[in-house]
Amino acid sequence: MDDKKLLNFIKTTSNLPLIKIDRDKYLAKEFAVEYPKLLPLVLEKGAYDAGIPDDYIEKVSKNAIKYEVSKSTTMSFLSGLPGGLVGIGAIPADVAQFLGHAIRIAQKLCYIAGMPSFSFGDEMTDEEAYLVAIYLGVMFEDKEAILALNTIGKVLGTAAAKVNFAVTSIIGYSVITSLLPKLAAKLGSGVFAKTFVKAVPIIGGAVSGGITYVNLNSMSYKLYKKLKESKASIGQQ
Image (tube, rainbow, N blue to C red):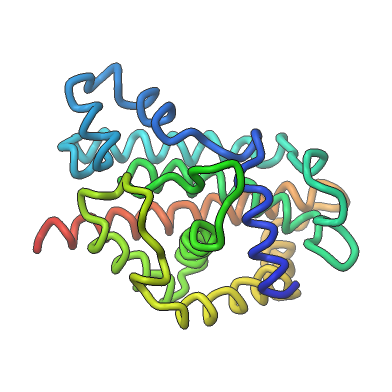
């Protein structure tokens, strides 16, 4: 897999009905009942900056991870993908399935933290896809991605819901050109697959489900923790 195919996959799949999550609807669903008066601030700034208690944010975040990870072994969106995007010469089916669920989880966690919608139009732009790539990089504990996430969080501040910002104008294009090949290599390499085949030695079709479950659970918590740390560091400044 190369970085161009990865970027194309992110752009193509992120707006699919089974993957795209409406930011405002999701946040309203999670916070309107318990904190109706704070909901406007949650929609504008995210849960942390709106003053939602940390323990409730943790509860919502962990529930999001638990729900999405549990669905990862049963819900498939591959049939809804355009022809040629998955399979020989493109994105392997197992990797495509993993990425689809990872993107769903990343959306929920990032929306809770006050990050902008993944895509504001019918088609995702390169800049929007770069932001998704950064989230995926954080899930892989990539140092450049983590630094980029912190930098973006500081710059956006309370303007997280604004649509007129460009990722590359904040962190520089060189970060993206460095990150995408690393992500593509990790997702396409035997190392990625072998690691979790050993961890979940299940035969046949169940292997991919086991790989997806174990991998997503661990990586989702990494993103959650880094988002939380980023918000905490900004709040201390």
